[in-house]
Image (cartoon, rainbow, N blue to C red; front, top):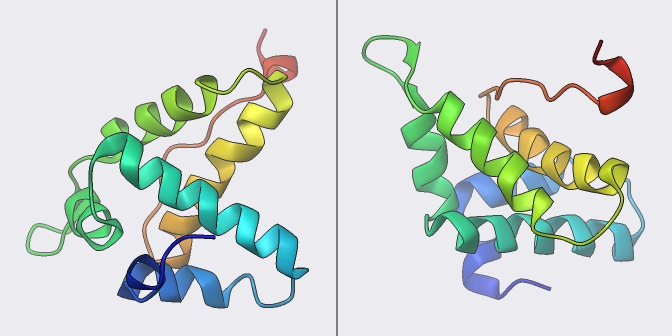
Length: 112
């Protein structure tokens, strides 16, 4: 389970509220995955949310960066591709819970 300081971040708290209906073990696994991703990109979760979208210009700035990093992060785990997709989708869900969207990742079976 991530530490209390990480869980107290505004963006993490917002995301954690979307997990309230999950079993405790699943909720903790998703929060730990998010904490591991934040360490992977060496960024504070609140900074990630601030970086991905420019409020003044109303345009996405680093959406491609975080989309790529979510995919790279998931690929660092030696597990089947669908489990890697599950991990990268946790990162996407974090951004969505905070009002931001990353580009969707297409599963292998949908590629032509």
